[in-house]
Amino acid sequence: MKYVFASASILELGDIETLKTLLEEDGIPCLIKNENLSMLAGEGAMQDYLPEIWILNDDDYPRAHEMIEAWRNAPIETHDQWLCPGCGETIEGQFTSCWKCGRERRT
Image (cartoon, rainbow, N blue to C red; front, side, top):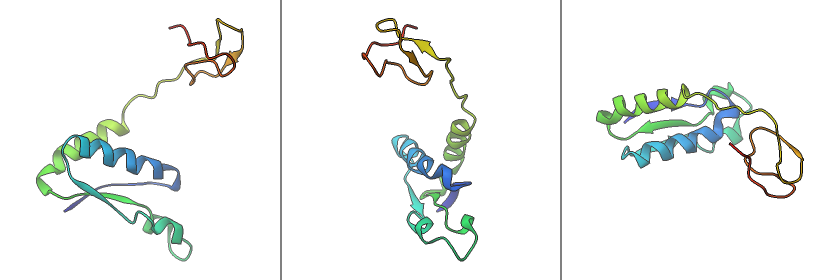
C-alpha cells in the first residue's frame, strides 16, 4: 500500500472523493485514510488530520500518480457573464442555463 495524495487544506476535502472515484474508475483500488479525523482537529497541526488517498497495489502507483498530476494541472475553464437570450437576465459565467427562465446559454 502506498500514499499517493493528501488534501493541502480543509478547502480540498471534496477533492478526495473525486480523486478516489477517478482512480477506481480506472481500475486502481484505493482507500481514504483519516477520512473522518478532520472533525477531531484542534490539538495538533491540521495537516495531521487531513484525509489521504492510499493505493492498495504498489504496482499501480506510477499510473495513479500520473492521473493525479494530470488532474492537478488541468486547466480551469472560465466564462464571462452572459445575457440570457430568452429573458435578458445577466447570468454568471459558470452557469450554462438561465436561473430565471431555464434557457440554455448559446455557445
